[in-house]
Length: 146
Image (cartoon, rainbow, N blue to C red; front, side, top):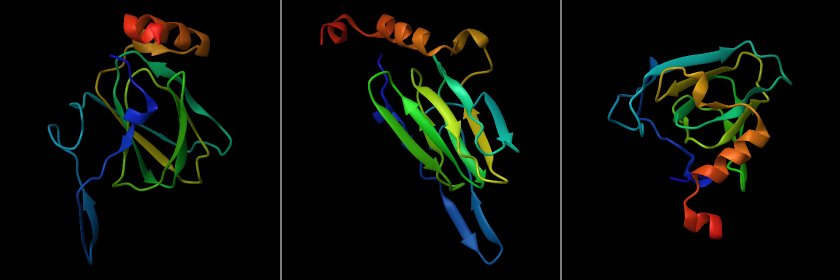
């Protein structure tokens, strides 16, 4: 299957609000397009520093801003897209085969990520040229003609 930046999207989580604050949640089999097998988070990232700078062969991810905000730059080899992640109840889904860079962290920002698989270095495409070569191998014969 070929993925594109158009398949990446915001997910609206339920939000329950009262005088005590807000509560949102995620459950496997609910709003996510995958079951969660890993959770990690980035914090105290200095402004101007880039994180990620890679793509995944099989991994699906959902990015949250639990505090502050940051930008997520996406590239499917043909199209590019930048999104601002800034609401804890509006995470952003990123499918495989998408080059991603995370930057422009505000002070105190917390970037949390849910992943469809446990860590595997073999799933990473860390070189942009290798990413483009990989995309050529995963396209269907019909797509290679177009």
